Length: 119
Image (cartoon, rainbow, N blue to C red; front, top):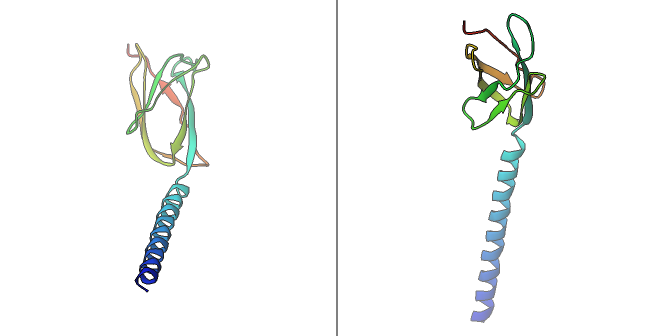
């Protein structure tokens, strides 16, 4: 009789434990699914000539992500969580330029820079 009671109690505890773990996994899954990720891209050009600038450093403030422009002056950041960010573009012999509180969403994900020479 004691063995039956112990077995029933053990089965109940296991059931409760598995149900709790499944609930925790579902809560974590729901939290992950509510986050939206997108690609942020843009182009950096010279303010006077409108020519593409190659090798400009673009920093996504508040993250560890840095991008450099390609031969067309284009840069991109992948898997960016939607939200507001500050971006900074810097290049040798040009003034550093920042754009603050950029709203990045699934619909809007482009920020272009026009850099002015430091002379």
